[in-house]
Image (cartoon, rainbow over the protein chains, first blue to last red):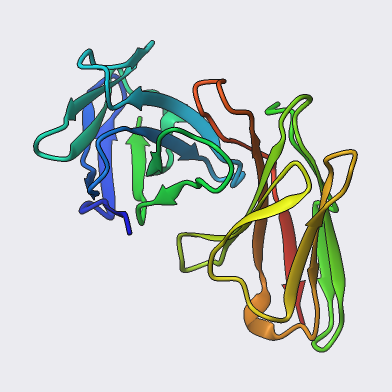
Length: 117
Length: 113
């Protein structure tokens, strides 16, 4: 079974600065997907970024980027130019590939990010 | 807006009662997932359906059941409710090939009193 670990329960960052969230996972699979989801105070789950394990290039979505280290089974999220709206809980998640019926997301415990003005 | 619709958004009910949560997946998505998020816990996978068939089961209690209908909407039935069942219940959907991304609805808040 896959496990996902987020070792930082809470982090704070000043507005406009950069923060990096850690995520490690354990799997025997070679092909899989990794995700970061954001959950703001509204509790909605919002996809932030996605990474395919077969791609060596790190994914980037605007101010969000990842550092994917497959050998180390590490998948960190960097938030650049932090904004007040980035305040949220961030979840790292793993999914086996190929995604067919029967696959699911396995989530880490989450990291609470507080952006201070 | 993720395209996944859940109803009701909020629900308050008494212990011992039974409730049904409904989910309409994104257009074209065949897979539906149900997750539970309690106040002090992360997201727990409950069950997945694919095109009407159950495909994966997680930590779903025997008092809970789900199904996916021919029109692909899904219902999660929670019975003999206990205080500990109070949680946010998410439905999510995905389609194979769309980057294998799972999109979540806004959730149904269940409070058992």
